[in-house]
Length: 230
Length: 154
Image (tube, rainbow over all chains, first blue to last red; front, top):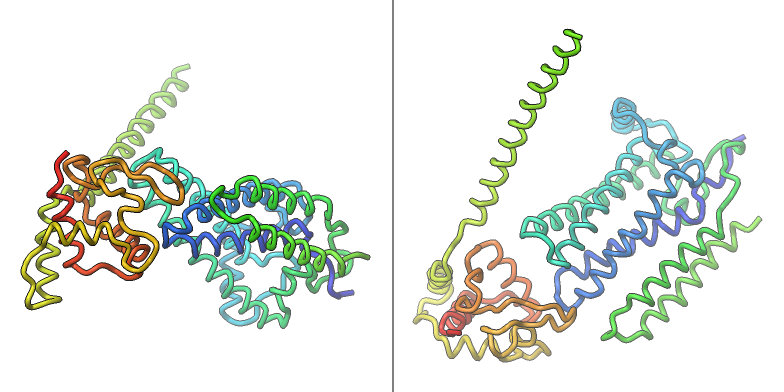
């Protein structure tokens, strides 16, 4: 029997939106020296989040595992061909093309984060600056492809994938649902995130701002947790 | 035994081939970097800025160090000037006002690496002008500032 089942556990969803926010923030703060401290802070956040996701990709729930969603190139090409003809198979978790975008985002995020650290700490030459700009721009390009893919697939399968990444629920056979939301891990992740921001908050900046964001994040997480409580 | 040696030998040749290939690639990348970082001189930039300034303004009458100094040290209606980070003395080390990181001197007399790379000059004028004057700098302004920086000796 097919209905809306839990596919994305809470840590995966928090990771997703935290990564989206930090990456967007890093891009918005990269043009001016004025926001340089926040740009660096956001970059470290991107790196930390990806490290979590790499671990979660091995020990997390079914659809978050690399072994579940990484497919052979031939399989991916066949799927994209289907997609272009407008009748792609519905996947319960990541579809094969989306999985490639996710892998690229993780790899480019690491490259961008590490090269950014190296530029900031002035450990290498100018080529690191070039590498940082290239990998960040490439990551932004993949983000746009990812968003386009989400919109196209949402339309094709008449399933709102943006809402799915908030509620964690997608269409699928009841016996294919993940059984645990890992709320404790999610809380630890969120605590680590907020804790890191408080600890690393630049001395020269007003802290009130951060407290407000923290309160709002708590509100948002309460909203995410409440409906999934059985 | 004999057979094993054959394989080992083939392995070495193969390894050598790979190493040669790698060296070639490294040399190629290196030369590309060298070419792209082809050392211009500060005077080359003065010429470029002058050519552009003539196009922008028919009555262009050259660059002026004191006008450049004034531009460098005034805040143009915002809260930052060039000297906020680069200090009032461009032959000394500067300090990023947000990150507190050290910035090498701007005057070529104190730091010969300044104004020797087109990509860097363009990138940093563009970024920093947006921070200080909230727009890109004109060729006149860039030329005046460079003339000022070149007039300074250690």
